[in-house]
Image (cartoon, rainbow, N blue to C red; front, top):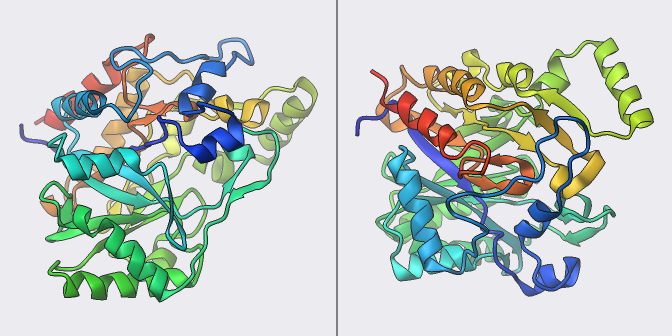
Length: 362
């Protein structure tokens, strides 16, 4: 079908047990553990969230991965962007699902990688403490070279998503270290040496952490913008901030704001309409399955409000070249962040149906 944008969905591979998760959270932990224990924390709070068509899946199962790909393709998604964890010195985590996709050749559905170069801390991932679980390191060129060869088979795979003939590789925190510049130069050289046209690096910007120019100066080719907290950081009055803080302290409830309000600030058309800036579509947000009362909740997300946000995002790419009409969905399956396109019991496939409708609109 003819589509108005190249929609790539971020994909979390956390739905299978690994020894490290067993050690940190208990035997058998997966992201479903957080999803299943979620509780309603205030009136109208939509929790727990229950998956519908695909169920509480295990990503070690090939049939599950195929069902996800078939569903995404049906509703207009070009491919999955798998979160990829390389912490330095050869240490990877939750890599099995993607490795099996590459090795098996199935599903026959486009993919790319997003390097989640971030230190894991207990609080952000469901523990009460803020201890470091595993630290992101940048050991130097030898490690960056090993990292490249670890994923070279994937980069050369005919399913790998490309821009300008180069495999797309996102960096979650492009400003995390000066070593990122060395990493990028190393990979560009290695790509040419190994028969690729290069690497198409996309730097990720999350809310106020850096601007487009500062990220481009690291050496990336393009920037992906995400503005979940844009309203909170830049558009609330001082009085609104104080009032919300009082309610949080004395009522003991998480910060909660309506999707109708928050989504108006997910897109900044002047920036996101630039040729090499790729905006993000955000179906919702609720971090409380991981962080409880400390989490942020975007309430009352509906397919109708999502449609309005989606239109804003798609409008920013309508005048770009076909190669750069890229929009990222955050996310395909971040269930413990209330941030997913997969069907749930409340809305079924309505978000996917809205996406397909708008992508096919003349």
